[in-house]
Image 1 (cartoon, rainbow, N blue to C red):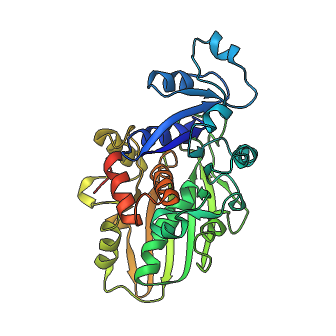
Image 2: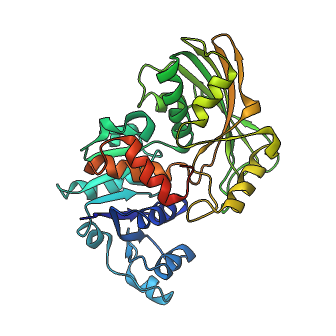
Length: 341
């Protein structure tokens, strides 16, 4: 029998997670929850997703907008085995109190919440097995997901002695109009930035230091990584092949003409990856790898709107023991979402 899934929050991440759940052979999307009428709420109904009302909003506002609803959030929680909380940052902490009232209900939170909200932070490549059977799991943020995926490769093959990463952050998502620098570059004076400590909620012994700047773009984040490995790769091609041969990494050759994030997202649009033209994989460039003994440098780009989507699906499988290991869970997820086999 399929695991019954609710998605609480139907914004940038929630709508993508809901679409991904609906594509899985072993999961059933019971419904989604919104706090107020919006075009996204209307779209959910058009897609056939039962829509439930979260927060203090009543039915009248939805009725006035002509959007039918199926009940309250509490009604939705009573129909599911697990809720994926995709509410805005810090709202999940309050929602957790609702979930805790139901002893059999499992919950997945997003990286905007503190790690303490869950039993473990999750990244499929890093710790799928450690999260099997858990009741509360937190899928880490987009940048942390990208770093944790890369760490899974570097740690297992060569070991990591030291890692410095500069995160060049997008200022806003494409649909946002109320935030972000218009003409400027904003440094973060918190050193390390929160990303390094967040990765250590998955890899406690990883010597990773992160800094961040915000730039006026909406497309993606870019990481500039400088790593001292414990053991040297044979050559730079061995390094490239380790990434190329791992799920959820996409490497571009020089001849493809992908100079940066605009071409990456145009590639995603042309390919039609997943329910939307998203890029759910870490993006790297063949030309972006450099090797000097045990010291390496590489660039990677992270699509902030979608990279955590497959991780949420794998987290459900881990919590309900639907697949024996990360590889088999990721194979199902990637196939259904149209990612590279």
